[in-house]
Length: 474
Ligand code: HEM
Image (tube, rainbow, N blue to C red; front, top):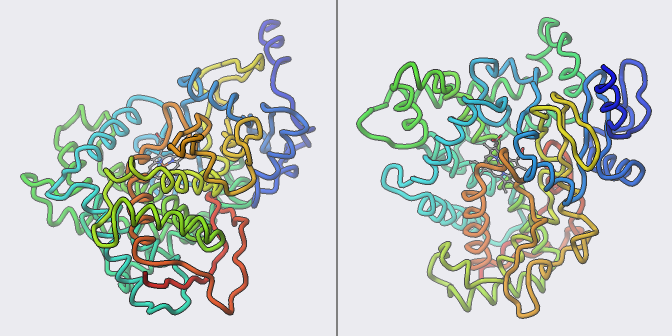
């Protein structure tokens, strides 16, 4: 007892906790990274909070985050239980990947997903072929706007969702397709439902979710999104032929056929729904939001756009489609894309982790089962690392000779055991969509429009406020 008490005396400092609500009033849940930044100034890189009776520790700055996620990787590899997702089917027997507890099923599902994505190849087309084909559709759709001002958000969203849909469900949708529009709308709605104070409260006081009608009412978009995923999967199962793997869902179904051992590793019907939904959730909004930031910065920094276009013209020309092989010859474009990810800061507070065992970090004691917030924003804008943390400055990723360099603190995909599983696909999409668009068009602010805002809107991801764009063919 004395030993444990001594350990607790090294628990990270934090603001005074009030009865029942803990420290929740100190946090602006619509802009949590900004609240964290202020608390970091007061309490240092490791500080504690309390959401009602749930203990949280927030990790800030590159050095601290690296030490936790890389050097003590297993200690920080668990995820907290998220009651608000239960109504979608997440539970003890099937947890998908993103919110799965650290353990056997998560390991197996993650390994399987990574290797299936790596071997795509699935069916006839490689992942890169799929992305290149979709970039072509995207450019045609942008062309058909005929230089008029428009909101590019819907087209970019469609394109990115289509990459996931073809890879996972073997289907792509035309941009005008009403069902697809509905899906994207539902998805956006479901993300908004998770932001703010109420979902946080429901997570820490899950008994409130037992009040009849509450989950259905608060998370209407999530429920409808999941119903849509079910339709896609059911349609898929009807046309399934075990001899021919068309896409990720087929590969998963084949794994399920392997019987009891596979079942114990999480390959069951409910996980087919949840893992594919996870890939959709994790892989669409993040990538399309990053692309929207990229185009916004090109509007705001025309001289940078011109430099990227000059490099595209030199290395690829105006006709040939960009390929991933071009990337090594395009240091400036690579630097711009990386700076978009750093400055755009799309997942400012990462996804919550949880300590898997009692651990210690920089002299602080953090007990098993503590929720850990990885403040990625504080890493991507760490003043100790970046020359101009609060400016859009592609030179962060260029050396004195103009060659591409990647500082270690570039962690938009996080790090360690739970690091983003789709990094490779995301990087491919960012490079191919971005270069194809800038090869074909110059993007400008329409004459009658104000200069778009550079700050973000937070709803799990930080995304640009809506803006209109004009695409001038080159
Ligand atoms: C997890 C970033 C695209 C699948 C994550 C995490 C981050 C992230 C920060 C949390 C890591 C942690 O908990 O420490 C991004 C960004 C993307 C992107 C910035 C695009 C620019 C994708 C894509 C996919 C994907 C395209 C898949 C198709 C996942 C999955 C996880 C994850 C499954 C959960 C991993 C686990 O818990 O084991 N991502 N991601 N992501 N991402 Fe991504």
